[in-house]
Length: 482
Image (cartoon, rainbow, N blue to C red):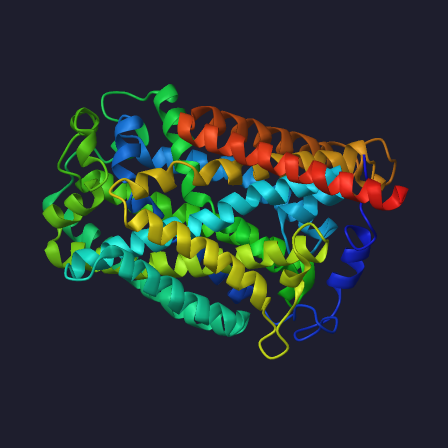
């Protein structure tokens, strides 16, 4: 199995761990991001009110235990966050899981991880842009959704091209707006509950309606974990974070915890206020997508429903901004390692942004988002295929932890049986074996639950990547033989 270059693993760690803000090699990415900036990118990509769109589906699937679903999903995704935190210290490079799989499993596995993550990073922003276009069309029906969608792509691309710090500042303002709207919902919901009481028992969001069903909760968890896709984008900025890998790892874990708390609180309150029972909602699947909005409208008023809708429209566009920025870093990293056309490895001298990689990501996203906006079933088609790429990349991430610490035996001072090592014994087994294995099990379970369309598209994309990899290896072999 091909090994990593010095730049791909330990060498990258040496180069990326030091330096303060503004540090970086000539022509490389600049270390300008603070802890707050990293947290903003992660929360923007996730979106503080991510459960709004799938609240009804989860409520129906879990038999009313929607809050437990998010608590379990947060714990499940903590395995992935832990593996990211482990590997960002091993390979603190742009490209995230591509760099980690390359370090832990070899160049071939690294390419496959990057290739699968590319499907996620290019299409999740397209879905977010489409959400934004649909929401803005609802507010201004005279303008077709594809026009709003294209406008959102253009505006956020210009911000990303202006530089990572500029985009982070604007993103912080948008994130603050989303959190304010969420706070308004929480306060309004508490006032209504204090004045008029709940529609069901106070423990129902935790125990379910009519009894707790572990199988129903786990089925809903397989959908809920998709709300967390995007927090991993933080790892893509490892070469632009002042403070190095430790700051990135801390931001990853903090982002997951904050998102989990926000998701649990809003779903608990919405479940108490929802006028329909979980059974009624399960019997009327057509109403599941708007369940959160209907709940807010009936319990508080139309003004808050519209406020949530506007927040989701703007927030979706800036979730796409964070996703596009992460996609640009992934393309940049793969191009720098000659896995994609080298032109995308150039960094703009003025802004410090990988301009060509960002434009490449923006072009693909624009075509996908506008094309979907012009189809009646465009949202369903896009949504069904975006998840498999991310989940496959997560699986390779967990495998990378096992590969680096066990198969390759790197960092042997942290392996069990090394007397006197600070990470000796049970803690090492937990973080370097048990946690990644649990994370891998979660990923496999979610992929199995994915739709047939998602599995088919993911499989075709994987096979295409393997063909590209084979061609690249064949070209290198011919070059060496010649």
